[in-house]
Picture 1 (cartoon, rainbow, N blue to C red):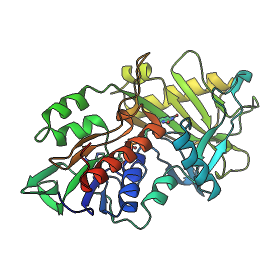
Picture 2: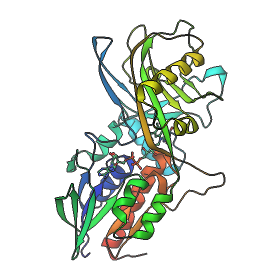
Picture 3: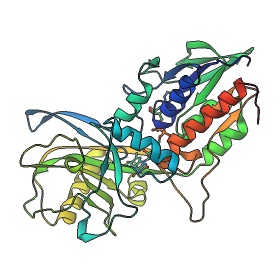
Picture 4: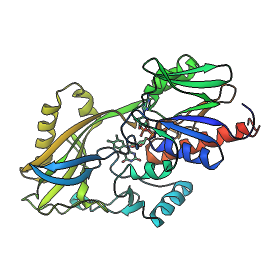
Length: 343
Ligand SMILES: Cc1cc2nc3c(=O)[nH]c(=O)nc-3n(C[C@H](O)[C@H](O)[C@H](O)COP(=O)(O)OP(=O)(O)OC[C@H]3O[C@@H](n4cnc5c(N)ncnc54)[C@H](O)[C@@H]3O)c2cc1C
């Protein structure tokens, strides 16, 4: 690598990749972003629903992270700036059983969760529906491959912003030590039920529940979040199974999972619910499993000699905040290397 402006491929358009790409572009690098999905956001995702019980509707159910906390001063500054421009909103849900919300308020992107990544990636070259299954180094430059075809080349550096188990497959040829570390990162799976029902007959005066037992870890009233579509007389639900329950039902057919989670939700709200729309989604790598006493990891991996880096939630303590910080940490390392500072 030479000079101060590098050509960088960022693989993954979740919050880590988006934050990394934005910081690189702001530092003057020529960035291109690649993602296998149709849109951006990764695990900050929203399912579009266009029809509810045969009636046209337009609503979004946040079936990835429902909301997130901001604890560090750097991330808090970022989300407050997002709030000022109407991209993020503070959410203080009413908790079931009068419980107190640990840590105060949460944050949500508006009008949907991917909006944050869309804003960060605005004006940057973005290639969606592009699964990168190989990164090849030839001389001093990198190319990206998908299904045996070179999809882009001529990059000075590659930043992998994808979950560790998926990064491992791409790292194996270049940094087998990183591949082994990535493979060993403990990530938790989550089955998610999302849908709409008639408003519960039992009356339900809360927006968020954290059941202490049973298959459910979290119940969210999606329509109670800021700037979400509200359908009169209906309730919108996003329900997370516990990692243990999910692990025991990883290969259970989705229709059976849906029925079991619907029954668990009925128990939680104290009565049967009349469903109008329902779907389930299985996240194999939803969140980082933190062991008690774990220190947040350093932030990002960067091999300046190769021009290869890795970022993502798993490298900086997990969650949206960790992913954002990791993406920016990798961008700072790339920029430092480009300006000749290898420290
Ligand atoms: C159900 C659920 C609940 C959660 N709850 C919370 C919460 O309460 N609070 C919180 O802070 N966090 C929560 N999280 C975690 C949070 O969403 C993640 O930590 C964060 O969004 C991870 O961002 P990332 O950019 O590191 O990874 P991702 O969001 O996973 O982004 C990776 C991107 O890479 C793409 N990709 C993967 N492989 C390839 C490939 N080979 N080629 C091209 N593209 C590829 C993917 O499509 C994706 O867009 C939750 C997550 C889930 C799923």
